[in-house]
Image (cartoon, rainbow, N blue to C red):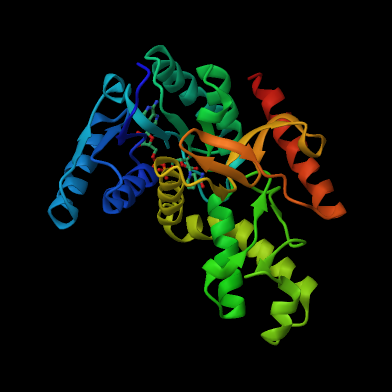
Length: 316
Ligand SMILES: NC(=O)c1ccc[n+]([C@@H]2O[C@H](COP(=O)([O-])OP(=O)(O)OC[C@H]3O[C@@H](n4cnc5c(N)ncnc54)[C@H](O)[C@@H]3O)[C@@H](O)[C@H]2O)c1
């Protein structure tokens, strides 16, 4: 199968994240066919029915529970299958269970020679994106992780609130692991071209180091906080999934901090982590290595080392 149907997407895993993503995608009207797959067939069927009942409010499309045979021509295959964090668990705690799940899912996709783009969302997303890449044998540009797209949104959200400005005017990135070793890149952060510190002073904030530390901590701990309060996070990530799909389907060449395989950038090799990257019809076009301060670069290397040691432990 060499052709993909640009109007068709598949979602594997229909729990909180998969179903919220399907709901966001349905409202976007980007696709005319959304296939849902879950190990629990009833769950996929129930979600497909429920979400379908919104179709009369947005426009005609097909949303149904399917099998792997139904996704051969899907333009994007989103994988959200896997256990989520329990209160107090880190994303890396999920690794063995979810690598096991990927070892059953990815060969099903690979043996059908699917031509679409794999978008990995399940956690730990960087480790699972690496797993998907190795097990699928797909070209690197077609295997991407949602990475720190969500964390970056959380950072923009926090900064927008702190500075009382539209978060869409904030340009700042979280890079590295989608997890505890992630890095907020303060050195190049700006608000519509105005260096962040200057904009902060314009808004009456002068204690830059303290504010940055507080905001980075809040962003890093968002998932823990939400999970402690409501067991899972899913709306934010669903919007991140929608945004990445949009960039692919519309061949936007937008710069998003998705995760992909590193090839010596900042001296980091054979690890998947997030770096701002140009995303379009072919998935990842190229990484855009962001300029980093000395400390940010050191922390990025530490983040990569953390991920490398997990990969070694899993023998992927
Ligand atoms: N990348 C991100 O930014 C981000 C954000 C939030 C959550 N997540 C991750 O997304 C994943 C899903 O979270 P959730 O809250 O939806 O969990 P959930 O438990 O609600 O859903 C997981 C679903 O996967 C299904 N599943 C399990 N094994 C399967 C298999 N082999 N084939 C098909 N389906 C299978 C389960 O039946 C279940 O419906 C977790 O790993 C979570 O940590 C990622």
